[in-house]
Length: 272
Ligand SMILES: [Zn+2]
Image (cartoon, rainbow, N blue to C red; front, top):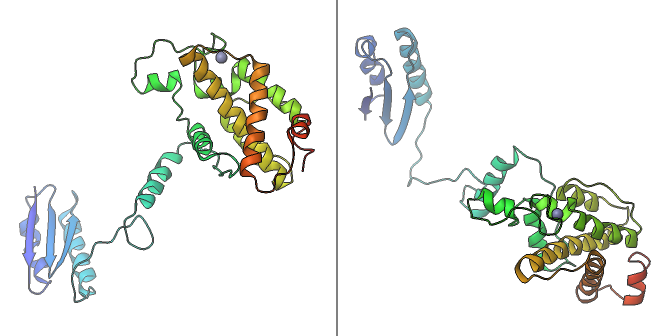
């Protein structure tokens, strides 16, 4: 049940209207008091009459301190600090809500990797790449959800890029080439966290990140070639693709780059 009161005069009248007699038969009364241009919506709970009256008295006391400013009404968005709506502020709000249930590694843009590769890595971190399992979970009909490389594991992002024996072999060859000790990663995000904190030199860390970007990008590309074009590349050739693409990115996108392929193919961290 609802009770509405509209007042243009003294707000003390509210107490008179919502007195004991008026509220006596109401189980869940709600009153909306309009004082000047201010609208206050008050939930009067299922409480004793005296409690309800006390709330109204408190409301009247609160409203007594309200001073209306002259001028037009304005809308303020509470998403940001400036009171203005923006898509970015809304996106941050969504991310806040989503991320409170899962912790994701932060995404750092690598300017040596192309934009499309950075976007791919960002989607990988969010677990948003279109693997067979991901597509099925979104309601799409998929003929097969097993991995096309090992024909045993379910084809989710972590399997394709990390735990599949095919991906493991390529990664081991790349880590050997880099002189980095093998690690048993369980997920893509573990690899991302590892590369983001690897070493103490920021310049070499960026190079290692570029190599890891090339690794993930190439494994996904090789997976697509196999599924959609029927082309299978053995892991040794796959590792060579990773090296050459990372070299190509550095050569054309790194303004401080002065190395050649012979030096790079021997060791990526002994070059200038
Ligand atoms: Zn597999």
